[in-house]
Image (tube, rainbow, N blue to C red; front, side, top):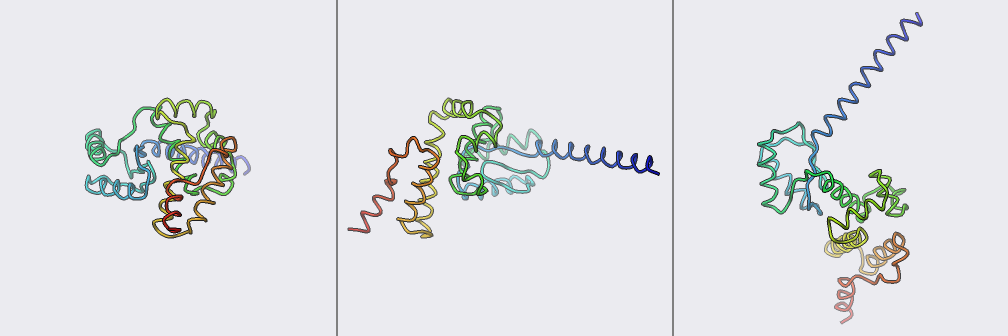
Length: 210
């Protein structure tokens, strides 16, 4: 009886292992990376492109399209053309794909759309753990392709988030400035003295005082 039970368990485990491996393979095939998606409006635009192109999809996130099934080369070519018309770009090369993943992680971190434990991590540690590369490799690759540092891109995204908060009136200017600056200082302690209140917030405060 024990022998039979063991055999049945092994068969079930093998099937489960094969299914997981197949699911993992299909997931890789059904995901497309898209360059220049940096806001929620971008997500809506890409969704509209997919709908008009009659390409079934599960969801669209920052820089990532989750398709329901793999698409043909002709569909991919047409999708690429339609995305370019809106300022986006499908990513094919491994290096460009890595850079885009770095950007997506930085955008999520800048918008506080990550777990609390990840917010407490240094940015270098956060990126290394998520992408499984040494930070020096990530940093040099990013600078080589983008012509700017990871730090500059991150601060830029923080400022964009501040602009959104101002536009929607979700926080006071002082709260936004404090929230933005303290978190940047925490992540980049070596450069904290160089960071000032963003120009947008400074000019807005001057307008209100005037």
